Amino acid sequence: MRSSAVSVASESLNNVNWSATSTPMPSRSFRVGRSNTGLGLFATKKIARRAAIVTYSGKMITTEEANRRERRFNARYMFEVNRHWTIDGSSRRNFGRYVNHSCEPNAEAVMRNRKIVFVAARTIQPGEEVTVDYGEEYFAHFFKTAGCRCAACAKKKKRRKARKRERAA
Ligand SMILES: [Zn+2]
Image (cartoon, rainbow, N blue to C red; front, top):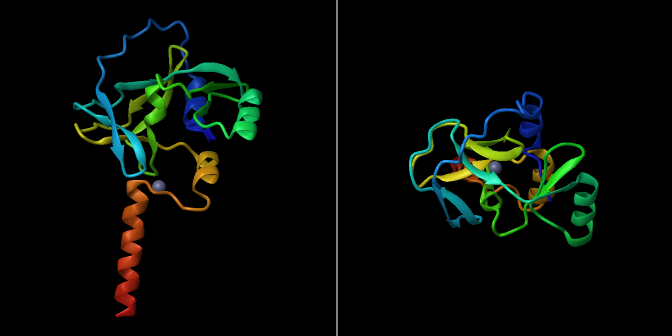
């Protein structure tokens, strides 16, 4: 399944300064824990806006090969960097794979030092789940039957139900 935070990533690709000196990743600011959709990544301390949270690591493969793996093995955790290259993030050592989708995300994918890094889109408080908007293709693939279960959509659904009840009363 194609995580295409791509739109964000490829956009940032155009302004990448490849010669930038590498900024060291800060000490880990997350833990993996239970979320309402399975496992998720949670902040263990306050994360400043634009601060790097986690790298989406894995083998760089061609997007063509990624498509093949998706068709053949229903492979997940394929992060399309651009039309030609995709990261196979299926390794358990890739903590980036635990970041869940949200329609109201608090993080986004950017290209830093030739790596896909999830950075905070706003200040994230300790205990908050770190989420990214994986884009339309991901959405179509994963949510077409059950619908999105992110916190923002769950809230909307609840509101809709409440309104329906009000109308029925
Ligand atoms: Zn949603």
